[in-house]
Image (cartoon, rainbow, N blue to C red; front, side):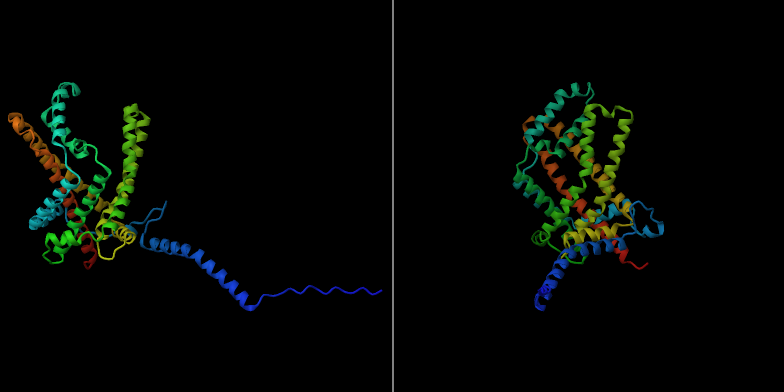
Length: 368
């Protein structure tokens, strides 16, 4: 009996249109997955092409040294002073305007708190410092209390937000007015107040990055407070290790913020995005970071000296006069001086960083 042969199963093939559609979907999926990878790869290659340094490899001097002709420390400081004095009218109006806004929205140091702090230092100073607390030491402690906000009491969340916004607007207005004057225009303060706030969000984001970059220093300060309380810094290998780690953390923050200060200037340019500003600032300082960092540390030193030279005599004079005339104890001389000095400090630092940035850019643009 003959057995019927089984016919081989015929594999059904998809229509050509279905196969093409399936392949097209795979290609689209692959493109969606690979697009971010390709973008990151392009950014890394671009960064490596712009930056000569490689991790864990010594960089040759010929690859990282970039010429930079800058005025000396005193010459640059005097240049900032001359520019501000030349435009002292709108600078003064700027300080007064933001000072008034600060009083209205945030408040200022309390005169009652300042008086109470003065009395406490006078009555208990001998016990605290073993009988040797000079008037200058009292003034220094009062100044430190005013700078750290002890005299202002606890601020609400809204007051902190207003304080941050006023700080940003003071910075932006100063940069806007200086950029207009360097362009040969004669701006009015009204123009700066109305137009300078356009890049507030990009500046805020770069400012957040600056705060993140200062976290290593904050960590070192917290560690110092804890180590001091436990006696870890009295000597020995523990103290040496702590100071080594603290030095590394401080160096890391200083390395980061050098370019971020320039990014705070670059981000105010029209059409500039935060990431683009950070990238441009990094390219601007690479190979000459230490020279720029030293000038930023110089302005910090100048600000500290000015605070001591101006505020300590004001506190001593205020204490002496009110000791002779108790009827004028209510006059908030020191709180007002703290407010004016704070606003002047922001204006001075913004002007210094902007002029330093212009010097670096002009040097790059100058023919070799």
